[in-house]
Length: 140
Image (cartoon, rainbow, N blue to C red; front, side):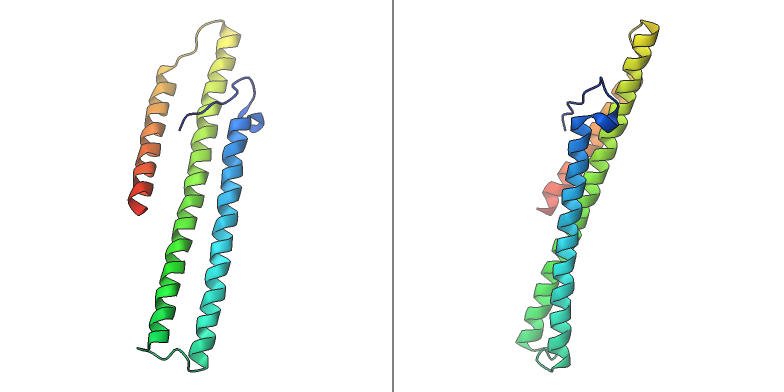
């Protein structure tokens, strides 16, 4: 993930970091919508069971079971996307904060900031992002 943060401002005012925050909000809305859909479907299933229309080992019960399993998987994926969005935002703001502080220190000292620690952080963050992307690819 390539960051194009504005290092002239703190992460709270950075448009790139704000974009990551918007992704969290979008993923949260999606996760809540999927969860509500699952809840409605489960309520419908319980009504069918109570009315005797979805007896065990019948085609209707198997159809309900399959449908609910699919919705549960969708709910799990939406929750995972939400957590990934939160993690990406956290990496972004942490990276931005470290670079911003280094730039501020460089401006105060008049010396180039130490970048070794930031480069190590960037490498670790890229490794986490690659691992998340590969996990996401396996799920699809």
